[in-house]
Image 1: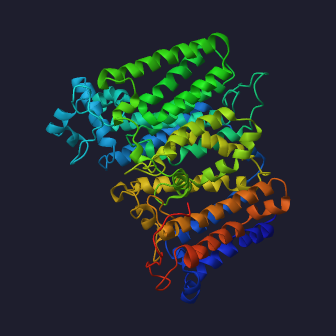
Image 2: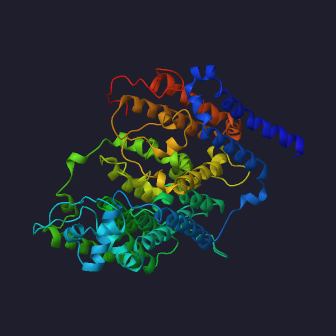
Amino acid sequence: MNGATLAREALSLLALPIAVIAAGHVPAVRTILPALGVTRGPVGWIAIAVVAAVIADRFLRGPATRRIAPRTRTLFLFAALLYVAMGLWYASRLRVSGDEPHYLLMAQSLWREGDLDLADNLAREDWRENTPGPVLPHFGAPRADGRAFPAHSSGLPMVLAPVYAAGGRLLCVVALALLGAGATVIAARLAAPGAALVEAGASAQPSAPPRAHDGQPFVAWLAALGPPIAFFSFHVYTEVPSALAATGALALLLGPSSSLTAAVGAALLASALPWLHVKMIAAAAALGLIAVIRLRGRARVAFVAVAAVCGAGYLAYYHAIFGTASPLALYGGLPVREQGTPLRALSGLLLDRSYGLLWHAPIFLLALAGIPEAWRRRWWPQALLALAILVPVLFWRMWWGGQSPPARFLVPLIPVLAAFAALRTDPGADARGLARWRWVLAALGLAVALFGVARPGDLLLLNRGDRPTRLWTALSGETDVGRYLPSLVTADAAEERVAVVWIAAFGLLLALDAAARRTPRVDRLFAGTALPVLVLLAAGASIDHWARPVTSGPSSQTIGTGPSRAGVL
């Protein structure tokens, strides 16, 4: 391709985005389409950077990019260094928040006093080691003897107790960063089930499923590397350990070896899940079912025996504390009053402006596109584990996770979703549909993570309910970016209409992606910048004139929502 051709292609890619950004500076045009106002802030520069990345990807693509196969230890070391650097920078400049001080207080009490009776710890204000406070108690149901008991599961504090003793909160951050790096490597492993993960001389056994393209494990690792694992690799929550345990067990069960060691390892990892959080019991049960179906002979017997012993110990623990062998005793039984609406929860997990996965990690749009391919390849174990992790969250009123970084309750699912995203990619010049955008989408997620971490004091990663999202405020100019994204924490008709707009927009992209795999003419839509620009403009216009109409001028933040009512979602 000569220089003149390269220049023409670059100009064709730049023309429409630059025209749209220029139109955003014309008041008369903004009167018709107020959404263009977002281009007058940092979003406009981000758009230019994205187009530049698309151009670079187009011109640098070649045979060398068709085979991307770093070794496992390289992937782990890179992720570990990134997470440790991010975590130490962030944690050394910001105190703990949300549930973090409670997990650390439990770890303190376990190490120093050998118990989980936090009354004396709270009285001494031991939490001041990690936050200036005040920290209000998070107590669950009382013990059988009437004493208060923490409302949080004890698994994570048990793991962190010796780590906290050795180095306090910062060493706990390092430990979680290493667990997060391990989860990204497992994502790569799940993208090539039945085959050894990219190692020198490694190959699948003849009886194993066909090995995926070498680039697919790399895409899965890259998808998992960004948010939300990147956020929770330095926040003291159970999500990253849960992701490592759940998907690590799955990787062992899907591997080419059915050895006793793999079976015992999978059983131990699965048995750790209920200790980390009660909501992970369903995931542990799903892994047990997968093991019974897939394993044979002594491996199956070993898994069942280890899981049974661990399960008995888990129930005995609750019986000793509460007088009943049920993990729900921690909450005094099934918390019916906390039940939520599954459809709203699912929409919010993906699209909520503060907690939605797709706004912070758009690479996972590829995971939705990869579901049909997963069905075709009969990835039922991955799908079963994904459902077991997801379903308990859908029926929980606080699906967003409280005061926390985005997509908290989806973190244990991320390695599986990353493998689904990798299924939709075909590394190299012949990538089709949404797969053409894989590098840009992954880069956007990593950019969001780095931007949020760079300014810890601004609390860009911490959200609370339906309050304005600091991240979008920081990225806004004259027009608030958050205005064009839905908040689904509470029922509001306008927010639901905004969500419907984006469901339609993403649905259109997924439909075109499916068609692009069969029709070159449709695939060409994904090669330029016109499709994403037009979809964004259409979504913005729909929000301005239907979902959340502007009532007093293009730069006003006053909106007309009509009567507040639920019913769209």
